[in-house]
Image 1 (tube, helix red, strand yellow):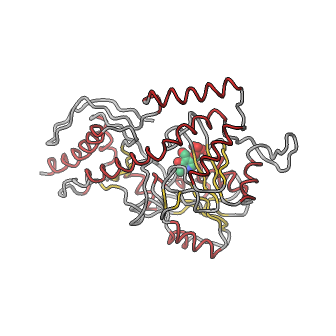
Image 2: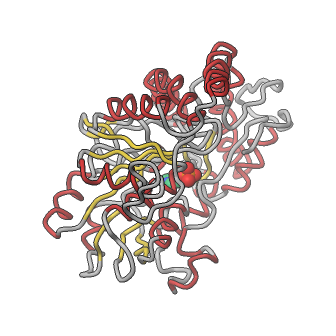
Image 3: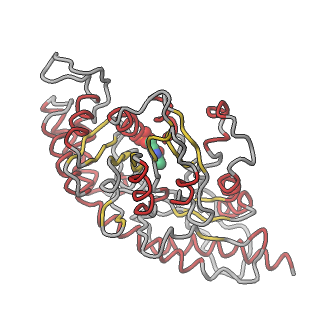
Amino acid sequence: MLSAAGTTTRESSIAVPSSIAVPFTRLDFSDPALLEELLGAVRDIAQRGAFTLGEPVEAFEQEFAAYCETDFAIGVSSGTEALVLALRALEIGPGDEVIVPTNSFIATAEAVSAVGATPRLVDVDPDSHLITAEIVAANLTPNVRCVIPVHLFGATVDLDPILALTHEAGVHVIEDACQAHGARYRGRRTGSLGVIGCFSFYPTKNLGAWGDGGAVTTNVPELAERIQLLRAHGERPRYQHRIVGTTARLDALQAAVLRGKLARLDSWNEARRRLGSELRERLSATPSGASGGRAIEVTGLPFAEADHVYHLFVVRTEERDALREHLSQRGVASAIHYPEPIHLTEAYAHLGLGPGSLPVSERLARQICSLPLFPSMTDTESEHVAAAVLAFTEDDLTSSR
Ligand SMILES: Cc1ncc(COP(=O)(O)O)c(C=O)c1O
């Protein structure tokens, strides 16, 4: 995680206070009341010695299912395990292909590889950076048994057209909602749209644990039962092993932390939505003369009524590395999500998809920059980020005169 450092060193017509440092994100220790509450919940678990499954996990599962508006939620050890168990529950394995956007965190593809299936890596829309029904349709080979749309950055994929065409083809949809807890697609929560939804509670996520954690959501009782068995050695009751499973439980300590934070998730997401649309608005003031290299484009919304819970606020520019250097000098942290599309990683070289094969994602990987955005961000911090970005485009105008 990048932290903010440095102060303003460059002149610009936009006044930027030199003393502000804006971190990329801010974790729970910055909220003393929340910290105390969560420490109390952790102490309670430790004093009871009830670390594995049991009441805290079951209570969280019920609350998270209610929140996602699904019949079941199963707490698991990470978002990656959530995807693996979802694929295993659907009996996807060797010989099967699973459509995965190459513009995602590598875990989406790794889960497919982990069950012995083959990720069919596909390109994304150049504006929203998300998979679309057209892209899915163009890649529905006879071996494809599943599609994993990723609600990347917190923006909802336009799922209805994908659900319609996969339903027709008898193909499953597993939502990767690891970056989009609480977002609503046409009124429905992410995680309730595909046959299974998968969530990560990695600490920096919109709903983050104090370590690793994840959840699987579904409305299908048989799948819920199978995932419950798979995450704990196929065991029910104790020492009766019905199927070959694994150790992939959500820790009770993490469940206790997550319960405290789930109660705040909607208000945090609301803050993210507000900050995201304000930042969009401020950056729309990018001088129209800024062109070519230093022009800044904000990631587009995937469709008119799309929801966006701004797990990440992503912009594009030809001169991404110069932008990041410029921001760093002004105390603004930044990051890249992700510097390499999955098909160009060393790990997936064996798929034989070389440079130029999925060109949109390859171009995006060179241009994208994630700006700070987190619920406790102050207006001053948000204005500072916008001013620093705008100053970058202004420098372009100045230097090209
Ligand atoms: C889109 C996406 N999918 C899957 C994962 C995997 O989650 P975890 O890190 O909890 O295994 C992540 C988390 O970083 C993610 O962002």
